[in-house]
Image 1 (spheres, rainbow, N blue to C red):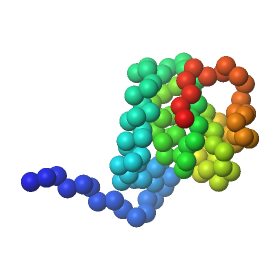
Image 2: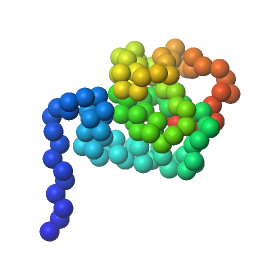
Image 3: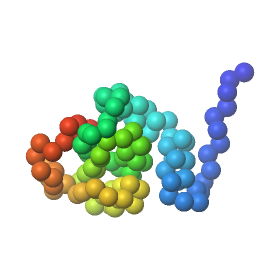
Image 4: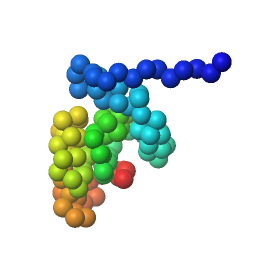
Length: 111
């Protein structure tokens, strides 16, 4: 007998629950997160990292849970707002290819 996947609810009572529920119910988000995580060192303490193209903020949130100091950027204003609603601070809008942060200020960049 194969294990049945957990049922996903349609509404979560708060932001944290919503992020966790969406992540738990999305094989694509889990796969994307695992792929990105594989590029990072196991210890992120003291590192400055940036994720580019954070979509709705779920992956950005999961990356921040790993440690380190993260910033997020996206090209689309609505995505920036969504990411900011999920993770709070250090979320920026890119203008073209320009990242609105100082050069050489990150130890890792994930796209």
